[in-house]
Image 1 (cartoon, rainbow, N blue to C red):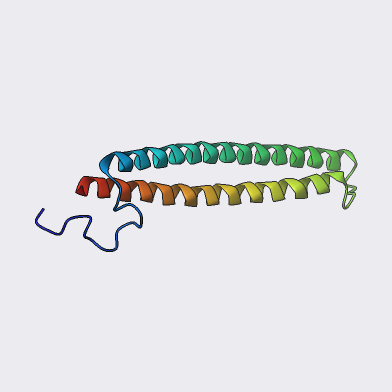
Image 2: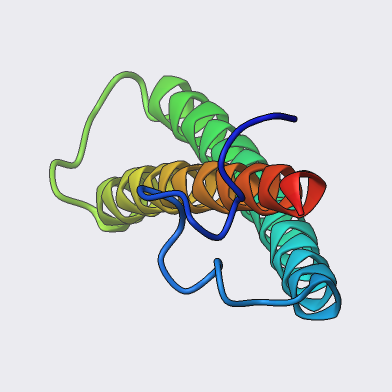
Length: 122
């Protein structure tokens, strides 16, 4: 290239401009480990969410069968209604965790790309 040196540039990543190639490689490796850990956590949360949703479906089917067996009588606010409410909240909570993990993963992946780009410029 015929431009200014990467160290003289402004607007680069704060704290990254002073790192030598080895330090940058260490940073890239650390970020990659974080990406891998977050991907594993996201997969675990998605699996847990699916399992909870399946359990909720099972409880709903059982409730329908009980409802039919009792001739259509319903007990409002019973234990199964409480369980269903708890399970729905758990599913929402897990979905929120997955979304936040996805956001964190996206941020780390972007940092890895920036770090690699900075490394290529050196």
